[in-house]
Length: 140
Image (cartoon, rainbow, N blue to C red; front, side, top):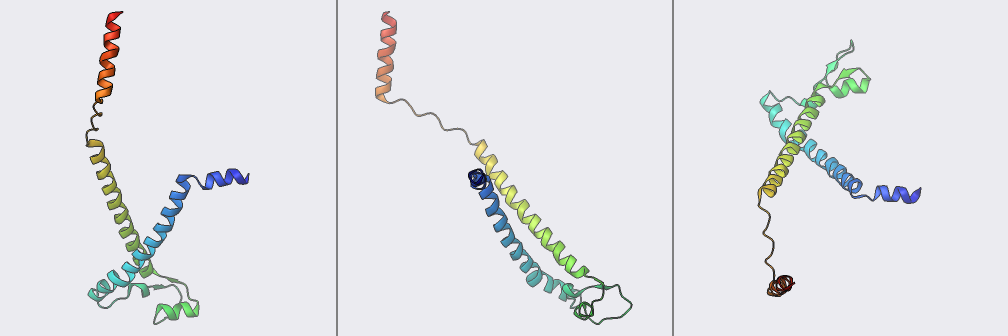
């Protein structure tokens, strides 16, 4: 059973998938940082110094000055600012994957469109042996 598991786990597809998942996780962190630290601050500034991460809807009867105060009090809130950030993360990741797949498909089409290389010409030895074979066939 252990040997079967080892064969399964070490198959090329499983290892490739694991590498893809690890790189994807790291890429997700990069995109999240890009959205939260680079994209959202200028958008928030253009919209009147709004911090999207702190946007929320209070579902309780008590008013709170900030999201942190509401969470500290244990109030039920809808954090729609965090949802906007996550949505932007998704759009950027989806676009990056789309561009990568598009580039791979373009390379694949170029590879398929290239004519196959011509077979190598037979050597002088092979030509001579072919002539000898043909001459012997003709004598029979």
